[in-house]
Image: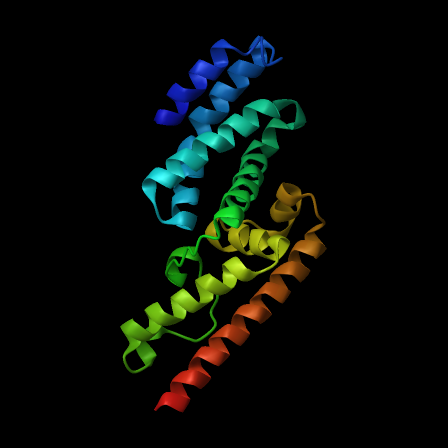
Length: 197
């Protein structure tokens, strides 16, 4: 994977970067274990293989620079996903990207029931998916991060709290508020479709 190759160049300069040799070995292990999963996660969010690869490289460069903040090797996966979500949000914000992904690829929010139960269901499901995805990217940062970790990676409240430095209760509250906002988008979508009929 390209991530490993680009980080080896960084690894050669690990003494310059202030990373001890055992830190460089730890980073190699993190890349080996998690690079593919992080890249797939980022691909799911941005929908573009090349952007996902670049974003994943950046995530591991950030991990390299902040390796001393990894306190427990058992939480490395959550730590990397927190970096990935934060980096994705930072990447998204200044470019004002409109990343409209089908809702099924981001996660199942169970907002409107099975698509097959509605007339014109395939087109309607795509339109609703776009509306929900746009809504996700308009959520406040913390709510968006919670939704992405919960739906795209299946993290539980404790894992989300760990990854984002909040309590599990705060993760639950943020997810609740995010879902309410997304339900309103779905309700508005169906109301507008009824009005058009």
